[in-house]
Length: 368
Image (cartoon, rainbow, N blue to C red; front, side, top):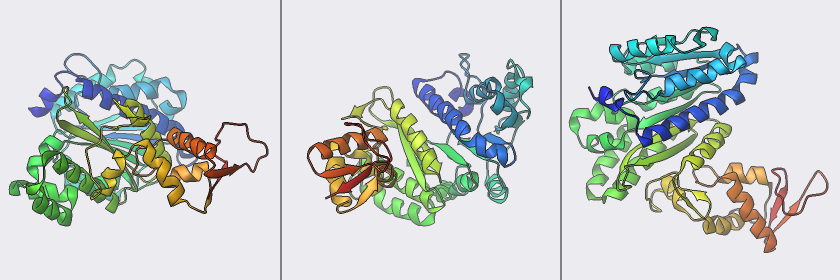
C-alpha cells in the first residue's frame, strides 16, 4: 500500500515537516492553555491520517512526539485530548501499541483515542456540526482523498482552532484535468476555481502552473474562513522539482505569527534576511504568491508609500502589512531603523525615553 511505503524510512523532508508540526503544537498549546483552562480545561490534538506511529527505520512520527510533549508537561498532561485516526486497521493497531508502550502514558488524564475510519464527507459533516475544544489539527493524506475545504473549515471554525494540511502537489497536479476525480478536485478548490484552472493550466509553463495551482488553493481556503493561510514548499533532494506543501490555516494573527517564525527558521535559504519559505515562483498576476517573492528593498520602498501621512505603532505596521508576505517582525524593525536614519520617518514613545537604536513594538511611527 502507498501508506506503507511512505512510512518505510523518514526522509529529510519528513523530518522538517515533523519539526514544524511539533514546534507549533508546543508553542500553540502554551498560548492557548491559560484561557482554555478557564473555559473547560481541555485542548485537543487531532491527526486524521496518523499512520503507525513509527517509520520502519525506528524513527518516531508525529503522534508519538506530540504525546511525549504532553507527558513531560504537567499542565498539558491534564488538559490534552488527543484523537488519532487512520483508515488502515493495521496502522491503527500498530499506533495503539506504540502509544501504550510510551513511558509515562498513564499520566495523561485523557487517554489518547485511536480510531479507524475513512476521512470522507461524513467526517467533514461531523467537524462542521460539532463544537471543538481549542484544537490543533493535522491532515496528512498520501494523496488528496478526504482533503476538502469543508473539512478544513470544520477544523478551524471554533476559537483556538488551527490546522495544517499536507498538499501533495505531485498528485493534485495531474488530477486537475482528470475527469474521473472531479469530485475530489471540486471539494478542494471549489467548482468555480477548478474550472478556471482547467482552462488556464494547459498553456502555462511548469513553474507558472505550480504557482497558479497553489495561489488558487490558498484563495479557496480563505473563502471558507481561513483568514491566514501560509504555505511552505518542499522540493526534492536536488532542488529541481516540488514534492509537496504544508499549508497552515488559522483565523488568528497570533497563530499566523508563531507559525511564520517557525517556518522561517526551517527555510533552507534567506534573501537579505527574508526567509524563502521555499515558495513557488510567481508573478504579479497572482498577488498572494507574488508577495512571497519580493526582496527586502521592496519593503523599504512600499512602507513609506503605503503609510504616507499615517502614524502607527511598530506592532500595528507588522500586523497590518505582513499578512500574505514573507517578512518577519525583525525585517520590519530593520527597515524602520534605516528609514529613521534617512529621515523618512519620525518616531516617538508614549512611555517616555527611548533607548537609541531600538524599536519596541509600542513605538509610534510617523510617515511623511
